[in-house]
Image (cartoon, rainbow, N blue to C red; front, side, top):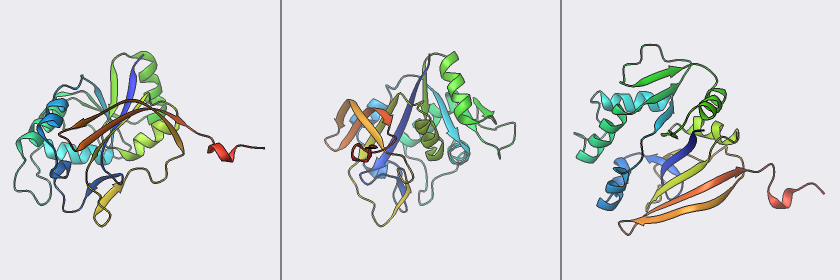
Length: 201
């Protein structure tokens, strides 16, 4: 049976990006970049918006405000291009132009449930906030990992990850610090029907 990892990179206040900020908020360091290079092979799951963004990068589109990719960004995009990708979308058209990407029009929850039951190895989301939320709510997520960068983007933060989430209990299964400033926390998630003090009498 496959394992499903939801994997987020965030500011401390839970934003996936911020207007005017570079990738990794400009705060990646050698320890973190080395760790990224040791990640196991995975089949990546993504939705329409993430596909359009990342496939654009793979085609040479540079993020707004940058003249060119930094070497670590280019390496990350190249690795994603080589990886197997499943794209859940009702609006994209075949054939997908990004190498090793397959379009899936079926309901994402049903499709991922079947993938988990019939496959082996690691399934991992990349970005795709709505998809990740749906998979979590369906109880399909085995590991929930967040790498938090030491910045609060209260004025410029975008893509607030946890808005609209259910209440979720998190059992910590791993944690570490990179470069003295970047914090990884990894949890086993459990969606709650109600908070502890909201239990029926």
